Image (tube, helix red, strand yellow):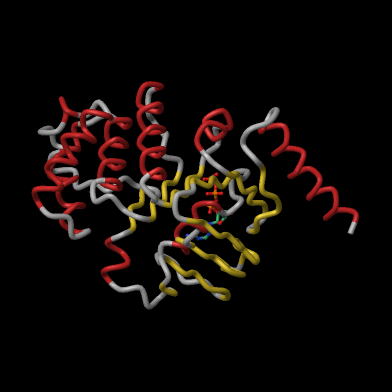
Length: 242
Ligand SMILES: Nc1ncnc2c1ncn2[C@@H]1O[C@H](COP(=O)(O)OP(=O)(O)OP(=O)(O)O)[C@@H](O)[C@H]1O
C-alpha cells in the first residue's frame, strides 16, 4: 500500500488554545477514512493543516510523498478538497466554477468537459450547470463544490462534512462516487456527524477528541454511534481521574 497522507505528531494552537495536540493519522491509497468528533474537537483545523492552509506548530504533514510546506504544484494538482466554503465564484455558472477548478488542477479541457457531464449527471446537477452559483440553493452549491473537488480525478480527496445540505439521493450519489474513487486508487478522508452514513462509506473511523486521535473504530459491527460515545466518555473519565 502507498501512503497518500501522513500526519505525524501535529500540534497547533489557535488564539492561545491548543486545538491539535499530537495528531497522528495515516491514509493509504485506495482507502476511505473518516474523522469523527464532537463539535470543536478540531476536525476542520486538522484538515486545514493537512491541506497546507495552516502551518503546524510542531509535527509533520506529508502529502503524496512530499513533506509540507515543500509540496509543489504537481502535488497540489493531485489533491481535491472541499473544506468549509465550496469552491465557488458566485457570478460564474456552476459549469464555469467546475471548469475553473479543473484548469487550476491542470486537467485538459477535453477531459474536464467529459468529466463534468458525468459528475453533473451523477450528482443531478445537469439542469443547473448554466446557472450562476449565486442563484443556487445551498445543497446545489454543495454539489458544485463536490464536482469541483472531483473533476480532475485527484489521488487524495479531502472532504469536510461533504453531505451538508445534500438530499438523500445526492448522498447516495456521493457515496458511489467515493467508492469509485477509492476503487481507482484514490485516498479519501472525510469528516461527518452522520454515523449511519459513515458506516456505509469509510473503511475506518478515527475518533478525534481534544485534538488527537484517541481510537480507531471499524464501521461495520453494532452501533457505531454508541461505540463512539463510549470511547469519548472513557477518555474524559480517565482524564478526570488522572
Ligand atoms: N481561526 C480560529 N481562531 C481561534 N480559534 C479557532 C479558529 N478556528 C477554530 N478555532 C477553535 O478551534 C477549536 C476546533 O475548531 P474546529 O472548527 O477545528 O472543530 P470541529 O471539530 O471542526 O468542529 P465542528 O464539528 O463544530 O465543525 C474550536 O474550539 C474553535 O473555536
